[in-house]
Length: 275
Image 1 (cartoon, rainbow, N blue to C red):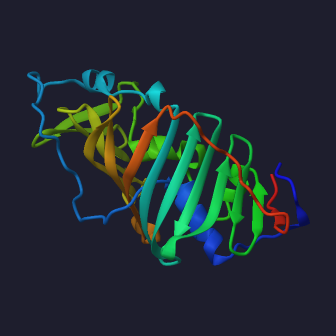
Image 2 (cartoon, helix red, strand yellow):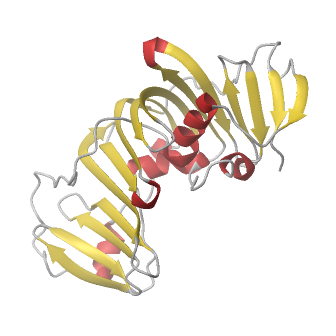
């Protein structure tokens, strides 16, 4: 717990600036750029000789897990958000120690650091530096203040696209030009995979009625200290009319120093959202 608490109260509403921050950090996390109508970009590498005859098991075995070299990282990114509640562009500086702690420092237009968000496995803090208010509670409780919040500590994994579908034999394999499509048996989940990279480049999810719930795209893959990472990620939730697009500005793996200090002022008001 941070020191210098005052006026420790409880509330069920959040001001506009803090809602923006929680959208950015608890829903996805990093990046920027503009979403296009078809943001999938295939690699310029060569297709494997066995294409297009890989089985689902072949494909799943080749998709990499989240690398241990990224368990400790520092990142700077730009974010573009469009939704009925909020629209705007922001920057974020991220300190991440997997799976223990994540600190995001969010800077709003004109270079003002408007908020800091600290997330651990059992707690979350959102510090509105302008209004000098700290909201705290369990990650689930803080995320629950906004519909559809899903990521928290997993935001880096989500933004870098190290997806590994379950190897349960329930996937149907199809091809689209130079890409593989893996569709779940119930038709509600589809992964698009670039076999030249062996990376997921798109994900679509539908509900039982066939309504599209969420789409994600990963593109502009780059090498960062030996790891292949998508520089851009875009996410769309049509039912919520919400779109987020993002791009890495800087990524440093295994940095010498990370900080997880919220640095709330002694005058800050603390508000408990519960557990």
